[in-house]
Image (cartoon, rainbow, N blue to C red; front, side, top):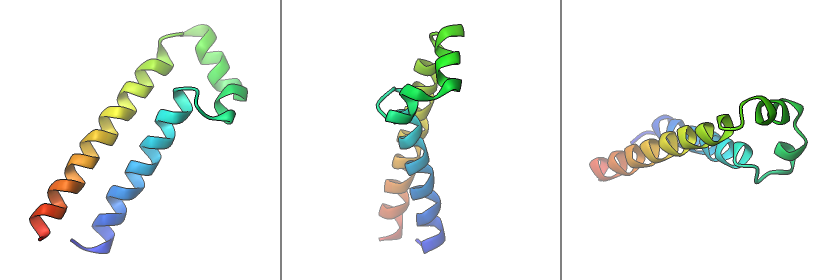
Length: 73
């Protein structure tokens, strides 16, 4: 596995983990974000669905990374 492939997986994992934390309300920025407050008021289920999408993307890429590491051994 090359460094570029590894970085592709790691960057997507970091971005999806940040999205999960942000839309889940675990970060300070998410509590003061005007856009997220507006979405919570207008569509209260939307952040929950975005967290689910982030979890799916994170798990899919984590599985792909593990698979790529096993194949490269």
